Structure formats: structure tokens, C-alpha cells
Image 1 (cartoon, rainbow, N blue to C red):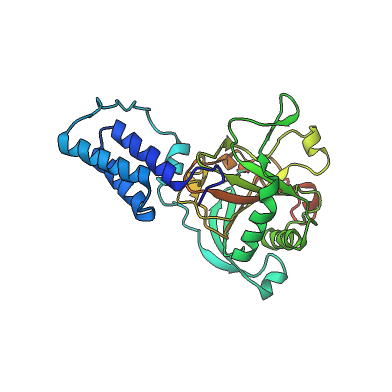
Image 2: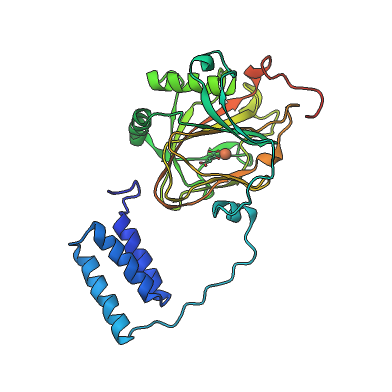
Amino acid sequence: MAAPLEISKNEVRMVYAETLLKLNQHADALKVVNIALTDNPHDIKLLLKKSEIETMIRTGTNNAPPVKVQATGVPTAYQIGCRGQFPPSADSKLYCLYNRTTSPFLILAPLKMELVGLDPYMVLYHDVLSPKEIKELQGMATPSLKRATVYQASSGRNEVVKTRTSKVAWFPDGYNPLTVRLNARISDMTGFNLYGSEMLQLMNYGLGGHYDQHYDFFNKTNSNMTAMSGDRIATVLFYLTDVEQGGATVFPNIRKAVFPQRGSVVMWYNLKDNGQIDTQTLHAACPVIVGSKWVCNKWIREREQIFSRPCLKKRM
Ligand SMILES: O=C(O)CCC(=O)C(=O)O
Ligand SMILES: [Fe+2]
């Protein structure tokens, strides 16, 4: 099946095999080609490549000089997180439960909740989206996906930047019965009133698609972005797909990584209880290495939560 970038799994495997050949790893290259052949036993290019590699192995010819792999120094916390190498959480108070209390509706339909972190507060809900809903969301987004942008304080505008390479489609709250239902579910999960919050964003990351380390808050009290509805108090991120390799949401400062699981949702607070920005929320979307990553994002604004989550004077 062709991925959104029109690169087939086969083509990726061919490039991988060529790379291994350049590294003089002929046996590994042959393994990759053989795997590709199990899916496509009659592919002529693959068959030719297989016999070419077998000849190379047999005769020991065409061995390229070994490519020197450049040492890249000590990996950053972001890189370690993307590789799934953060140590297990030292937070002893973390647990799973059925959330029956955030909204009255949850008494009838409790949600499976996993506490990911307390500072900042971060929870993961499992099995929130059904396969049918996921299919519908992807279907409605696909025709209008456009390169995502990031707000640039220097120009005061949203611009396309190299650091965010996903495609996005925005949907107003009342766009269709599904968006209405999804927003109601977000309110149930978070206890927040969504009036004044941003539209739902459906996003797709292709191969290599990522969003470098960033904060979701603006921290500009006078900017046009926060004047009406306040800053982004919380982020709600639905995962519509598993990702075969890569694509985690990584929080380098608190050394946590959330790996996409189809139908789950991660939610975290970007602001502290006193309304100040929380710099521990630095996060990134790791590059997708194999697969395609779909997410749906809701940035919840602060102003409408004035009574349900009032700004506390004391720093919590
Ligand atoms: O896709 C992800 O994992 C994170 C997305 C994100 O941080 C954002 O859209 O602000
Ligand atoms: Fe973000």
C-alpha cells in the first residue's frame, strides 16, 4: 500500500538494502531483500537485486571501502527519549485507574486512565477512539491536509518552518456529529470548558515527519494570540495510529516518552496552578522512521477555566 508520501514499503526496503551494501553489510542487505520478496515474490527489481547480492557474497567482489560512520557525540535527552531509552519512571505515586469523577458522564462510561507524571500533570487515556471514528477522522482530514505552521514571535505570524514537518487540517467544534462528540469527550476527560479553545487539528506525519522541541504555551500576555482566550492551559493529543518505529512524543526535561497507541490520548498541563508557564513541558514529536503517524490535537485555552481551575496565588 502506498504511504501518504507515495513511497511504498518496498522502495524503503530497497533504499535500506542499498545503504547496507554501501556499509559492506551484504548478508544484512540480502536479509532485507528476502523480507521484501516474501511480500512481493515476483517483483523483478527485487529478484535482480537478490541475485546481484548473492553473486557479490559468493565472489567477494564489488566490496566498497567501508564507510566511516561519524561519531555524533553524546546523544541529547531528546534523542535518548526517541530511542525509547529513558529509564523507567522513578515516580512512585503513578498508577492506573478508571476515571469516574472528572465529569458526571464518566459515572456511566469510566475511562481507563494511566497517570504518566505529576509535575507537570500528565495522563494517558486508553481505548478512547473507536476504529470507526479513526477511519472517519482520517477520511475527513485527508482532502484538506496542508503543511503545518508555527507561530513566529518575530513576524507575529504563523509560518511554515523546517522544525515542524507534518500536515494538518483544522476542524471547528461543530463541524459534524463526530467533532461534537470528540469535543464532549475532551471536556469529560479534562473537566475543561472548551469555549474559546482552538479548533481540532488532525495531523499526519510521513516518513521523517517530526516536530522539534517546543512549548505549546505562548507566554506573551499582550500578544494577539492570548488576548482573547488566554494561554494554552493544556494539550490533548489523540493517537490515531500505532507507529512501527519512531514517532514518540518526548518530554526531555522530565525524561518521559509516550509512544503512539492507536485510540489512546495523552493530556498534560502547560501552565502551573498559579497560571505561570511550566518549562518542564518542553516536548517534541520524534521523527517517524517506519510507518505513518496520525494524531488529533486540541489546545485548550485558559480564560474559560477561570472558575473550574482558578489561578492559585501560591506556587504549587
Ligand atoms: O505529535 C506529537 O507527538 C506532538 C505534537 C505536538 O507537540 C504539537 O502539535 O504541539
Ligand atoms: Fe506541542
